[in-house]
Length: 342
Ligand SMILES: NC(=O)c1ccc[n+]([C@@H]2O[C@H](COP(=O)([O-])OP(=O)(O)OC[C@H]3O[C@@H](n4cnc5c(N)ncnc54)[C@H](OP(=O)(O)O)[C@@H]3O)[C@@H](O)[C@H]2O)c1
Image (cartoon, rainbow, N blue to C red; front, side):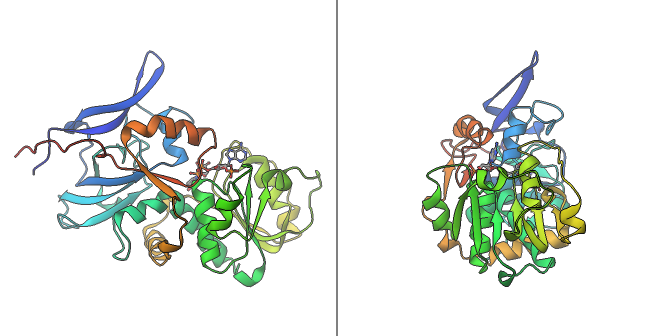
């Protein structure tokens, strides 16, 4: 098998209790001994990557480590014979970038069960515009649809609307004909959210700063709730009868304090989204759904492509909740490829 002796990666290390991260040349043997070697063309930045890169929330158990829960690239070698050399593939979730070297490096080596062929109608770049964030948004929407939430059911609320999951939920719901109410804390984000297809932009405080009552006025048929904690509790109390809330995030903490009335008096469903461990059949269906989206409708400048060296700045920004839209990572940007070893 041909491969270079080393490759560039965003390398996170811990020494004497201090976490440091930066671009390093990493020996090839650092990659785990799984069956499929993939040359990464694009990864994308997700909130979980920022936690892994800064050693928070025990996302990553041991360092040194290469984060990056998403990767889209080309198969260089497959010991299992499932994929052909040169085939374009996607890997998101599973253990990629958490405790297995991830997409913030020029190469990954993963088990074949984690790898999906890229849908032919989208490019590697487009697949990472969605990445885990968009996959999560589409997983949430799929679960709402299975709860019979249709465009006729009424407006759908999206929280954390300028973030990765939120913004792609706004875009995809709008493309599917839903009335979308986008909740954001960012003053000045209205034009961005309207350009994604939001019908109404509301301040997150209008959703969260509500009375303590166990039930509140019915405002939305459903929600894609990306923030968690007290915001999730407030949303649950404002959903219409037989509505549903897909929840994925823990930005406001892992605890959820709520009451049973939304469930036992209004028949609301709380739907958990676990994109990392979504079963393969559903995973393939969600990628097919992503591939059917009209990417040309995404606003200009919705995403940008950065190099590994630019990651520290973008990681800090996502930790502070300041990202708008998506950040793609090209691990080779700014570097020449190393000479191959035969
Ligand atoms: N369960 C899963 O499968 C899964 C998959 C992907 C992501 N996630 C989780 O989902 C969450 C969102 O991920 P992401 O990648 O979309 O992150 P992101 O790009 O940082 O977006 C999160 C958004 O939440 C809002 N926000 C941030 N801090 C907040 C605060 N203190 N109070 C209220 N709102 C706040 C911000 O939007 P505004 O400024 O517009 O309000 C921010 O842009 C994270 O917790 C992530 O770990 C889970």
